Image (cartoon, rainbow, N blue to C red; front, side, top):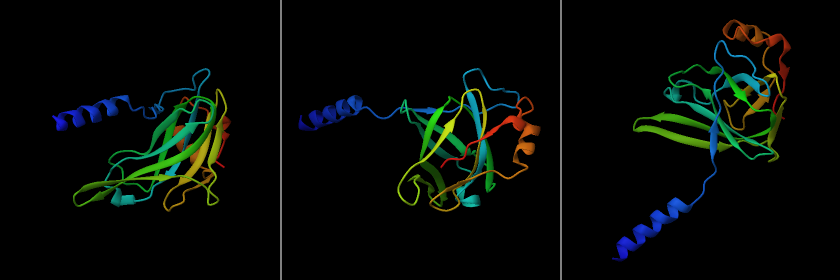
Length: 179
């Protein structure tokens, strides 16, 4: 009887607990454009593990400073072991804080998931602003080592992407690196 009561109590507590809801950003397709009232952010990501990632995804978590909505986006796709990967996502305009990096290390018994907070060496947060109706270059996000760093992308990065995303005008993009 006591066992059933404890089980029911734990189940009820689990149902009533409220966790932070997250939203996954939508990737930009080859023929997509910037929708009215929206924006597109894109950048370059240098991953932590390289081949040791085992082809698992790596993701960044950001939060909208006004709405407190948590957004997740992949910076390293599944089955890719390239050290650098390009990302491009549709996003609502606003001010965002980068707060967590998640990566998965391949092990002999499966995988080990790591979640690391993203902060500056002084403990403050990295923030960036996404203007409305814009194509926004958020630069290179280098998470090869902890802590991660953010810097402008190299000069030929936009030209490389123009060949993939033909409907976007990378010449008019705005550079907004998290600071």
